[in-house]
Image (cartoon, rainbow, N blue to C red; front, side):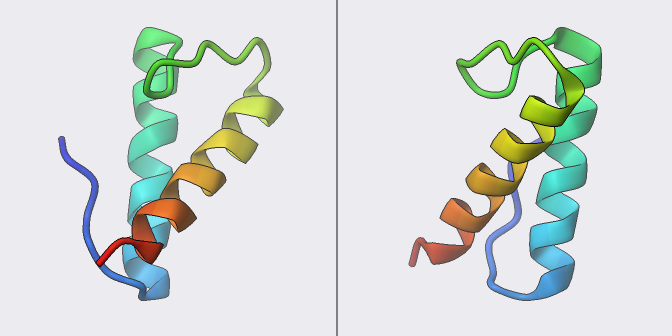
Length: 55
């Protein structure tokens, strides 16, 4: 499922949730393969905030 657009807390939180769900199923976030759940969470937060910055 594509990530949501928007800068609201709700959109960012939904994107983080979606990315972590994808990590649990496939073991990847985008093209990266974080070894631990903590690193996956950090990567998901970074991607979600980056998506929020896009216009």
